Amino acid sequence: MCKANSRSAQAIGANALRERGFWSVDAAFALVLAVAMFAIFSAMLHSAGMTAVRGADDASGALLSARFSSYALEMMERGEQVELASVLERTGKNYTSLRLGDAFDDAGEASGAVYCTGRLYVNGSTMVKMEACIG
Amino acid sequence: MASLRESRLGQTSLEALLAFAALLCALAVLAHAARAQADAFASAVDKADARTALAREAFYIDLSASIMPHASLQRSLSGVPVAEGEWLASNASGALREPLFHKISVDADGRYYVQSE
Image (cartoon, rainbow over all chains, first blue to last red; front, side):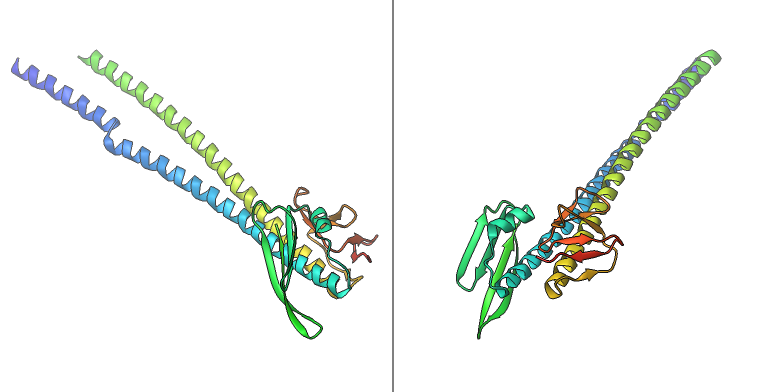
């Protein structure tokens, strides 16, 4: 009788151990870690992709403002007026401005990143600071 | 007792099979999600590469056009002139476009020229 009870208790203990092994804290923790690592990896990948796109947009904006400043200089050397409204229409941007020394002119409304290029140019015998912005 | 053990073994085995199936499903979902993430990342990087190349190309075109009017750009471009040469569209993605301050055109030989204003 006593032996039978002892065997029965052993069997229950073995079952309990097996079930505890199946749904253990270690297994649950491993699952949590796996899901967390996957989420972190996904977030990193998404962030890296967005950083690449933002970097390309920045490069594009910076080069566009450099081209715009060269275009403005070219127009001034030809003795032509820089029409900011036509620049906006041509480039499809929202805002542009041109500063020549103290004179400032702009068109459109800035809504987002605005990229500027500053340079010096010789106007007759004087050095004038020019800043062209577009965004 | 023996039949109880067999029954218990069978039950455990069924649980294991169900758990294994659930694990496989979870792995399939994770693999699908990972693939979607990797595709989105590759697409973003490709788009960024194409945009940078196009912006650089537009810069070289405007620079050479302001230095040498009527210049011939005797090299293959990473973009195609569109809208009467006022825009440069990417070869990789037509949705990517860069405005040009100097119009360019293409001749029968596939060479690009800066249009005279």
